[in-house]
Length: 115
Length: 114
Image (cartoon, chains in turn blue, yellow):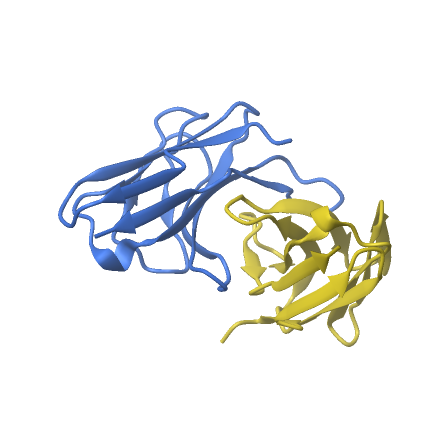
């Protein structure tokens, strides 16, 4: 099982609140990712990082922001939560290329509900 | 437009039976194809990764096939168990991306009944 952790697992919060979703990994991976997944739908990449002090926006536009101050930590922040932010957020990390592919390891996810 | 299409959307089978899930993709240039298992409320877990030169790979009761010419893949599950109930996601990576960016299908929701 991959050593990648997310907290909280579930969060119900009111509109306008600031929230931070935590993600940490103990595998020493340089690359980390945030995905958003709605029920029955595919994962969409919203942020990624190549390493410390590196952050990029993904394919799906998101009002969230991320930071990468330490290799093992990649938190995601929403300054003002809205009901449209209700979704599952999955964090992942990947190691060096093996067999021509980067294996991605996923955390358990945070289920966010904004009321 | 999603570049990875999976079928069926959902499937119910009895414990002990076999099943096959399908994946068609248009991602180009192709680098590799992965099958993930995602239990409800959990993150995806990798089952197999296949590169361009591979056409079959097994992981226990899971066997994945790849036809890079027709851009199709299948995941065959043998002697299903109740714990196989999950969403199975086909994921394709394009070549030349140092990020290793992935294109995800919507998954096939498999339910195994006793």
